[in-house]
Length: 233
Image (cartoon, rainbow, N blue to C red; front, side, top):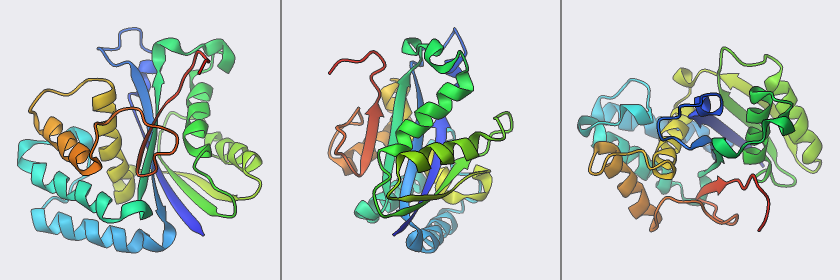
């Protein structure tokens, strides 16, 4: 079966900044969907846009009281697909990274965490096409290297492509940004009580029937992997 994976990241700058403004965790997120459902999902997003007359980029940072109903309906669309549409992210505590393990190369370390986020959901006998939000300052070979590492680690599956594209052209990367933004806001405790963002997160938590927090490895709908950088249980 062919799957498409749409990826985005949040708070990448905390990897290099000493002053982090109370943000502890850099996060990378991914939305997973069977390729055959992409066209239908995009059409449903288009209908929601038309209903609310919201044609700009969908982003967590754009959540406002005026657009709350629009964003709630996008969250509901995510749940309408059940297990056919899944979200997984990794939370990396910046202060605990030992950069010597990554050759003191922040970009290399970043893509190692990208690998960890993706690798554990690549299953045998499937094919995957992975779309990452484009970064103008990244190593031009990073996507090929990430694909090569995922291929070598998953010999019974096929990673057909890892491609960098602008989120402005892909609604499903924009949905990833939205879901990741909510997870990051909760994990980093960086959302104001009763704000539009807080209300949207509570709507998501009500649909999940649980709080947004690190999950077990087996969680399949909305998985938050808080990586343990110091070993142990």
